[in-house]
Image (cartoon, rainbow, N blue to C red; front, side, top):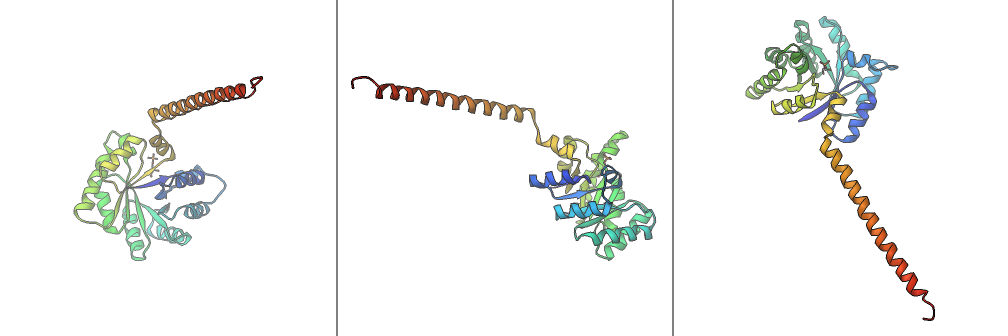
Length: 237
Ligand code: G3P
């Protein structure tokens, strides 16, 4: 299963790339609005210099021509750019045009399996059901991930299910079990996945026992040296 980072924060991306587990990155206008000082294009180019995995760049136009113009410009930035297009009638048309042009797309804001199925038919290479936002309105978001993963498998569709709007480590486990091909996670959730209180206390215990063992050895060696020194300086011998 692939893990993408859901962020436009360059330092977060560098950190996770160093961990050796980064398969790609998803961005959106909200995530970009949290960065400062760089244009969206520069942020995307920088991200693409860190990872060779897919990097999703989202269009904001709502009409087909506007989506095509924005998406084509993104695609020119780097070979691993994937154009993120919202689910809508216009989005479907744009995704199908991008597919004809060989530009990969990630259909975003999917909330039903049917929306995902349509996006797959239009040629999207990634389908992004939003788990957390469905949970927010008292619907089980993971059902859409499971249904879509099944549909893709049954019909051997040439696309991947990317579990998005992941809010906590339990979502991640559930998405993996539901058959998502990819999950995109905020940095905070990835860090939560790394940590466990028993891992932390175990590390502290091992360190403390190691120090105690070294101190005991040092004390024993120190005692022996004193014995040798005392023997060597005995008067009259
Ligand atoms: O990948 C989509 C994600 O950024 C949306 O997350 O938490 O705003 O629903 P959220």
